[in-house]
Image 1 (cartoon, one colour):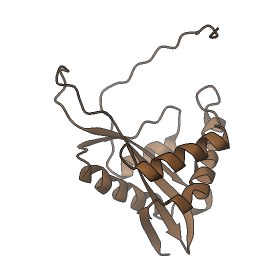
Image 2: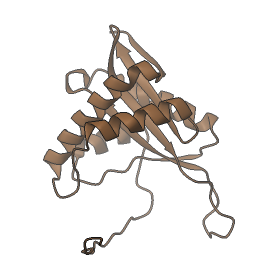
Image 3: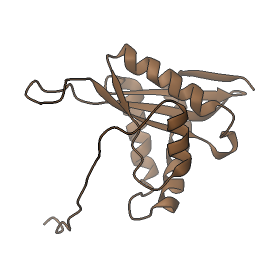
Image 4: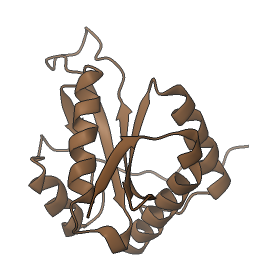
Length: 164
């Protein structure tokens, strides 16, 4: 199977929307209190903006037999401020999606490798792959690509009164 990875283009927006919504549905099934399925129109607007701009989000798509079957989204984080105590490193968040029927065929690994190259080309020295629900498949996938734990992220939720 031949996998072509390339930067996303405006014509890929419908496929990107389909990938995001399929990924959202899968995650919502894993943890409905953490994940949601966003509005398709909002997702479309997001991808139209970031594909055109490319300054804060880098998107690559994977094609198999001419069909977009996966994507990697590198979200560039703000430059580290000079007042922080951590050694300043440019960072990015990585989100990878592969359609169910193409998982386990190397598509994700090729996407992650391309995403890493694009990130480094933009001055990124550390990439985060956040996994916010029990998802052993995602942990195994990113671990196989060389990702590992970094620190501990603690959180605490609060009820927020409705606006107005």
